[in-house]
Length: 199
Image (cartoon, rainbow, N blue to C red; front, side):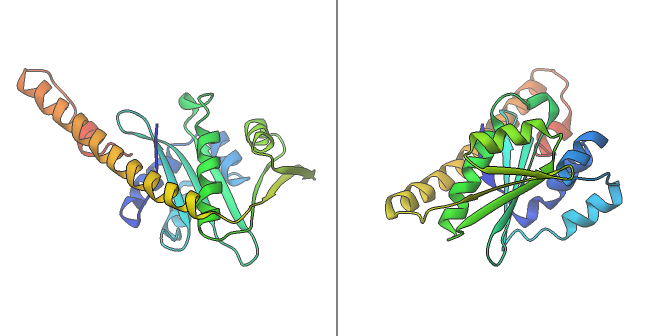
């Protein structure tokens, strides 16, 4: 599993990921029924410089999970979504731990996530992450205070970020190379799988 921050140049991959969600998954991610148009407008407003958008990639590498950290004045909000066929593999747990670390590196002292009370996977993930969970009128709130990052953790974080990017592009190169070899051997492959692995 490769987890790395996404850039503004990957906005369309984020849009396609959210648009591919089922109505129920959209409801759980955005806490309401949401249309394609509204999702598209939401993605257009994402600030990849100020905030953090983490992408989780499988071995293809295909985008299979997203996590967002939106910075606030006193606390920052998190949000998560994982493709249905990839759930149960602790991808959400890995994403939330990486967001915690990212938040601490940015000097954020408190994070929270809002989710529907019937979103059991999110509740379990928040509880495992030692977040305090409360529920009112069908909506749950989970929060956690974060400690300041140490110099050692900061150094480790920089190394981890660099490694995640190199692993992604290394994997992407292997997938493309393998596709070219397959085609040269007469195997039919779909160009879209090679040229757009993150959608």
